[in-house]
Image (cartoon, rainbow, N blue to C red; front, side, top):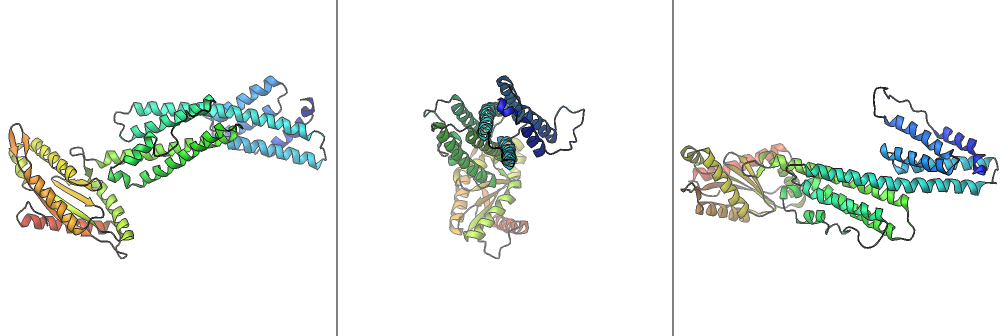
Amino acid sequence: MKVIQKYFPDIEKCVQDFNINIESLQSNNTNELLYSSVITEYKKLFLNLLLSTSKEDIENNTTVLVHFAIEHDISYLFLYSEFITVVRKLLGSLLEKKDFKHIDELNHFFAEHEHRITELYLQNFLNQLKLKSELRLSRIGLMPDKKFMVHYENHIKWVINLINYVQKKEYDNGYPELNPTKCEFGKWMGCATTSYVLSTTHFKVIEKLHINLHDLAANVISYCKRNEFRPATLIHLMQRIDYYSLEIGSEIAFLNEIEESAKDPLTHLLTRRLFNKIMLNKLDIAKATGREFALMMCDLDHFKLVNDTYGHSVGDIVLKHFSKVLEDTLRKSDYIFRFGGEEFMILLPMTDREETLMLAQKICDVTASKEVIVENISIRYTVSIGTLSILADSKTIVDQDTVDRYIAQVDEKLYLAKERGRNRVE
């Protein structure tokens, strides 16, 4: 250490030369440090460490520096780049002076500092990441209705299992599932059948993030199992995993919002507010692929008479009954909307005119054959359906006016079905 101490003035000069004076807006009344103040304080701690002389001081100042960095979200990459820059500046200065005598000792000195910082940063980062993940779990656990967040809950448990594996340093085969299609979260994504969710950009982003995250995890396991343990590489990989995990959580939260706003509280079908968005998306797809799709507009016949005769609560039961008929009769790929009152809109992707008419007639037949029993009262009802086949070409303008025009056209078909006697398809 005595050899190194003679270079302390050079080390201090290199650190000071590299430092940038940052003007902070920090108020004396705030308990939170602004990032400029954080960096200024970090540089002081960094210099304290490099100028430490005893083993005890080195260990203590390393702990203080790393804890400060973790607490204030200073990335390992920042620590490492600061460290390497100072080392290069110092060695460059000594080479200019032709002072080669103690180059090896200096290299060893800095290598030991780097090793201590990296090892401690990895330990503290993993502890913090585990704590964050457990807090996320506890918040989800307090949600009264988790919806899609229950699947994110499974994902967080997977992340915690990965952290535990890295921390235990017993690198057997007890690591979490690495195949993105076989973990619990991946199984949900592979089996998800809610068509309006599958069509969102959010779901597609989640798919990509999830695959990348598992790719990173496979690399983590690979590095753990090698004889040469590389903390710096593990820090980088785990930081990326944390980033992807947070991004997945954000996208899942968007899906939750869509779920909450998309479902009609009475029938649990999609609401009209989501129709325009999905319709625009399907028009884009049809324009690109040349594939036909269709609309159906359904209206319950003489529904006002049901409400007037039996009351609105019974009318609600009939609406829920018809919603169930639609869900049971149509395909999982079809979108079913409660459009307003007793009107329902159905969007049928990649469906031609003939198949549309066949499905519409089936809905009519099934509805007419059913009865609703309420307090020993049997209620029968029928439905009229207008249909419209849509074939978008290169000249089709995909905008709200086009959507409104198609709505008006299918509404005209529904009106024609009513005019021609109801309980029929047009």
